[in-house]
Amino acid sequence: MTRLILGSASPRRLDLLAQIGVVPDDVRPPEIDEDPKPAELPRAYNIRIAAEKAAVVEAAPDDIVLCADTTVALGRRILGKPGDADEAAAFLRMMSGRRHRVITTVAVKRGDQLWTRPVESRVKMKTLSDNEISGYLATGDWQGKAGGYAIQGPAGAFIPWISGSFTAIVGLPVHETANLLQAAGYPLWRP
Ligand SMILES: Cc1cn([C@H]2C[C@H](O)[C@@H](COP(=O)(O)OP(=O)(O)OP(=O)(O)O)O2)c(=O)[nH]c1=O
Image (cartoon, rainbow, N blue to C red; front, side, top):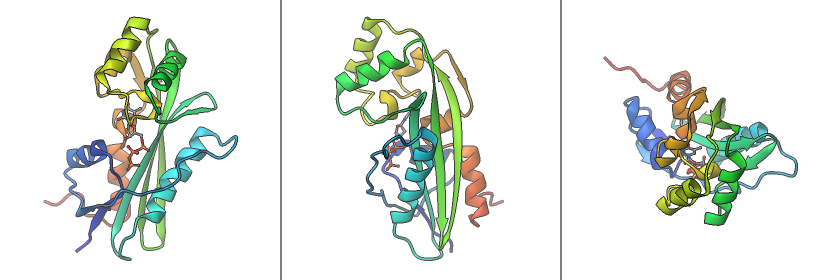
């Protein structure tokens, strides 16, 4: 029996897997250093972190490990998880009235094989008033979210347009995840 290990502490990733009928046999959140290297570009950073997460999750040789990383990029700049409300406010002001990119890389490991698939989306944020920013920060929804917002929460009110994959922006692109799981030999469709 093929066992699937979800290497993620994110409840969103568990929910998105459930959307395609996948229930992991175990959840083992990876502990890695998520600091970007000097001058590291967002996409390279995102792929590296997803691969590192998959590398550190312990699993038997025949187990399938699934990890992902979501990075918010404003030009060449990486907007990580804000440390406090002030940093979240600064991020929101930077994104206000502009487009940014959200990159999520899915990483699947089985034995010595590693598959990575980056999915890049573009997101437009409306011009935010001070009232909208302080009202949103008061919800607490920014905590633990890359870039300091979550499209699936109240900040959805700030997003008039996206191009790409909604599930990737939330944290796990279900289409690409289904493909990688099947490439690794996970039986996704069982009649
Ligand atoms: C942009 C955006 C991010 N996010 C979340 C998804 C991720 O959980 C988080 C980015 O952090 P990640 O480092 O990708 O993931 P994580 O630390 O939450 O979990 P783990 O490393 O254990 O897998 O931001 C949203 O939920 N909605 C959004 O619109």
